[in-house]
Length: 363
Image 1 (cartoon, rainbow, N blue to C red):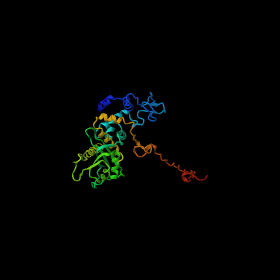
Image 2 (tube, rainbow, N blue to C red):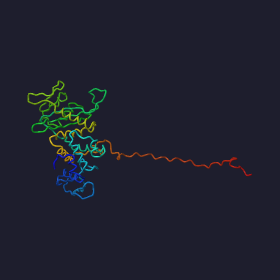
Image 3 (cartoon, rainbow, N blue to C red):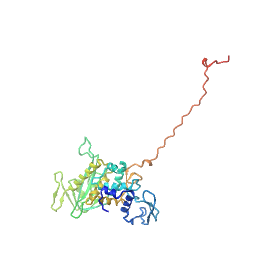
Image 4 (cartoon, rainbow, N blue to C red):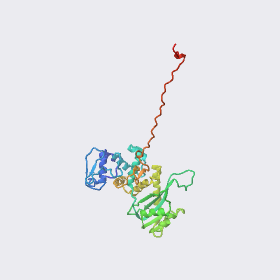
């Protein structure tokens, strides 16, 4: 099937829920479903049952585990129709500057909270944190956050530091990026920046390009070569004697597009969820040479290996949008029993005597 599909062609090709389920089964287990296996034990001795359930049920003959096409994926325990998942994947994967949760909610006829959770679960399938690059690499850092009144430009308590590592494009290979959001406890110093560089590059095979920041001096000494440009002296590009072109313009342009997406589409991104938006932007930047449909299909094939993002934290170590537990899982507060009011014993009223009530003695 052709990868690049418009939204109209997508609704024409997958008009009902059964066709969407078959699409996800084919992407996960192949067109002939020969790669179907148990997500619990990995056995391929499985069979598809004919049931009246919303999703077709599969059974493992080795361990007896029953599963569906969403088991063990980013769509695990979802209550949404898979047709809406299919549309959401193509909307997010085909948009160059991302899709806001409000727009996704209006398009799919769901609540904004559901659309927000849906978007983050799809972004978790667009990550590649273990990638390492070599060659000519540019690195730079920036701050993402809002503006606060009555403070100077150096005020950064309401911002989060972001570092990017970009491999330059060559005639044979396409440049790639790896962007990380630094934790609030991490300072923008040589130790932190150098640790990120060593994690995502091979220093002995990498030529590093940075600006004049002093924090790059110590980490740059461990690389094959280190070139810098001085932006304070309005030096933005320089041709060195060894033939290398020293600049960080690729990283600067990358940050410009990233901030346009955040400010123009999402308007506000919290410090906790910023890494997922960075992973989405990295994925689209690294696959910019293919069409939107191919990029989306490649992300949909990762649903079985990506980490699921829950809405509420179910147990320690689970990636969730909210740190607190589910409201229904919280222990209910016992209300004190209401004390019954003590009734006073009714005493017989004294008989009233007087001329109005007749004589008080026999006459």
